[in-house]
Amino acid sequence: MKKFVQRLLCAAASGALVLSGTAVAASAQPQVAAASSVVHVAAAKKTVPVTVKKIGNKTVEGSAKATIKPNYTKIKNVKIKSALVTVAKGKKTVAKNKNSVKLAAGTYKVTTAVKYTYKGKTSTVKKTETLKVTKKAAAKKKTSVAMNGKTYNCPAGYPVKGNRTGSKNEWKYHVKGGAFYDRTKPEECFKTAADAKKAGYRASKR
Image 1 (cartoon, one colour):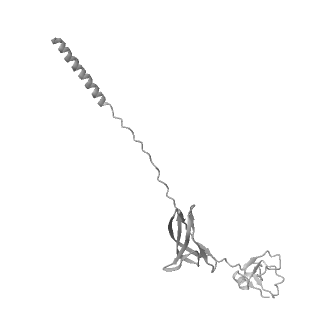
Image 2 (image 1 turned 90 degrees about the vertical axis):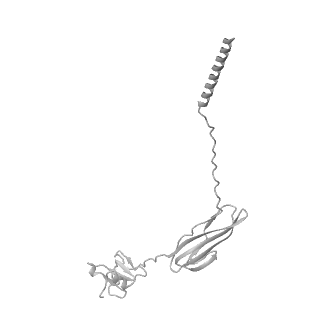
């Protein structure tokens, strides 16, 4: 009986050791965390119903004036209620809330305001820019016409005949009524005698 009890105690001790080893092995295994799924949602692009664009600088000729109008773009289903410009030159307001403005040469501050309705909501968008109106450089007036020295006549508007004989000191010009005018085949024709002088010609003595 005593031996039987001892065997039971040994068996119980062995079982405890086995269970203990299993628990240690289980605790030694690495813990695998479940990866969380991350979903990135792109932000919705904001719709811009109306965009005010730059009008840009202008060039005019002489005393002419440049016409300035609102410049903008809109998307579908936008209803424009008004598109106006306000113009200032220095501290002075030249025009206020106009559909278009005519401006002489100068530098201006131009504010474009566009009022519109989109999806039942009325809004106004504005933009201010510096705008320059400049005069186009006047074309240089032509005072002479080159000729080939083979014909007697000058073009209309250039009646003075220039004749290049010898060195430049001997270049001569002839006016109508002169003794050699009709017999001269010009190499250059001028608007006036003064233009011929500026070009280096001297008056014919006859």
